[in-house]
Image (cartoon, rainbow, N blue to C red; front, top):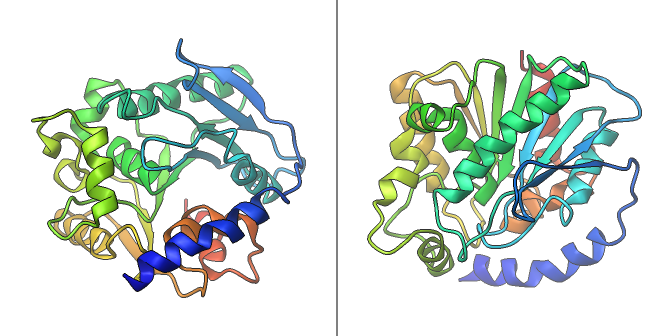
Length: 278
């Protein structure tokens, strides 16, 4: 209950800081479907430092958020020198799963084609997402069943970073997560078809799981469950426990991108891990 209250009280400071963020680059808007939520923003950094591309999928409980709302994240990644795709998808409860994972896969394919048409090398992609975005991107990266269904080639993905992800659906999930999952899935839908833990297959993609023990929404054990499965089947996985004081769900999943690396260890871990990956 204490962490839940801390989470609720954290939003004012987060939103206040969010609207103070400066825009460094103007992102390119690209639609990949007919729905207004089916689009992505492309951020080209002023000073390119790497040939790695970040494909980032926002969180928001599957029912809120958009690339435009999280513009500051794309701006922060561009500031760090990375070409970045910020992906949007159709939201619940209007659209039920698997609409969301289909959109993420379709967006990934459309984004890579878009970059390739620009003459940009797409052979090294880092896939990342917070919260609901971690849920969706982890399925795209590690479910062979989903990759085959939506025709996703993961051979060029060189790393996955999930922050605060609900990778396993647990009996001790918070009330908030249970409500959000009820909105996401149709009644009587087999949720094993939307649970990253159950869908994980063995592949080459190393993963970094960033998780807080003081998350008021997502159980820390969700990441522990996912790592145990990864270790069991031979997938490379590192679990990083958030040590920053700003360790509520909203702050360490997306809010950290409003800080500097020297003041936020989680953010430094995020970019440091990308720098060290293949």
